[in-house]
Image 1 (cartoon, rainbow, N blue to C red):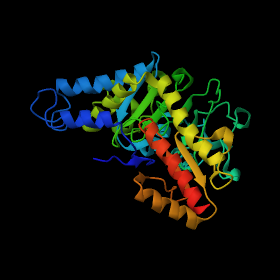
Image 2: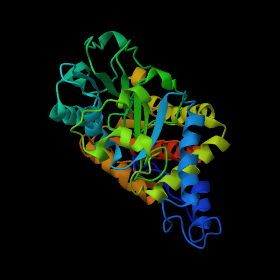
Image 3: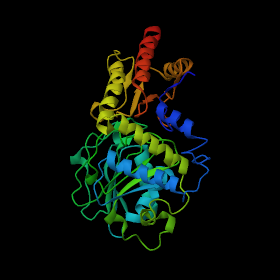
Length: 361
C-alpha cells in the first residue's frame, strides 16, 4: 500500500502507527469479543479509555490542579456558542480578537448570546498577521478575552499569548494544540476539535478552570452546561466512544515521541523546509502570512497566477499529494503540517516544488 502525502487541513493526517494499532484492535478490543464501538460507555473497559485520555492530556500539557478536561461533541463550532452561553455575563462584554475566518465565526455566535466587543483586529490587512499585545484593548469588566491561536485559512499563528490580567483568556486551539509547550495556567479555558492534531473528527477537548463553570446561568439547557460534563467525567450521555479511543492512542503516540517539546522541534524542522523553499524561490512562490505571524501548522502561499496554482494542484495530485489547494474562500495554496505529517512528506513536497518551478518557472 502506498500512503498519500497528506497535507489536508482537517480532518487531517493520523499517525500510521496509531491507525495500525486501531486496526489490530478493531474487531476485538482487549479480549472483550467486540469492538470498542460496540461496547457500553458504562463498561469498565470504556471508562478506562475515557479516563486515560483525560489523564494523558493533563500529563502532556502539564495541566495544573483546578482544571477539568472535558471530551465533548459538536466540534469547535459548538463551542463558539457554548462558551458565551456559560461565561458571558450581563453588563460584562465578551472581548474577541478578530484574526480571520474562525475568529469571525466565534464572534458571530457570541453576538447572538450577548454583548460582544472587538479587542483587536487585523481585518484591514486581510488577516495576514496576528495583533501584538499593545494592540489588544480589553475592557476592564470583560467576561473574558477570546482568541484563535492559529488561523488555518490565513496561515497565521500567535507566537506569544497576551497578558489579560484578571480577565480570563479563552483560546480556540483546534489547529495547533499539542504542537508546542503551553502554560495552561495562563488560560481560563482552551478548546480544540480533535481532527487536526488529536485524532479523528467527532470529539472536542475542553480544558476549563473549575471556578469559571460553577455559576452558569440557570436558563442554559443541561447538555450545554460545562458543569454537567465536568461532574460526570464527560459521560453524562453517550460519548463519541471510538473517537475518544483514537484520541487516547494519539496521545500515547505523542508521549512515545518525547512529548510536546519534542514535537515542537520536529514541527519546526518540517515547516522550515517548506518556508525556505518558498523564500528561496526568487518570487516564484510567495508566502501569504507576515513573517512574524507565520503558522507552523498551516503554510499558505501563492504563485503568479491562478492558472499556475491550478496546474500545481493538478500535478501534485498526480504525484500522490493531497490537500494542497487553498481554502475556497481565499484560494491559493496551503500545506497543513500537523503533528502526524511526517518529515518525509515535507521533503517530498519541497522536491516537487523545486521540480515544478524548474518546469514552469
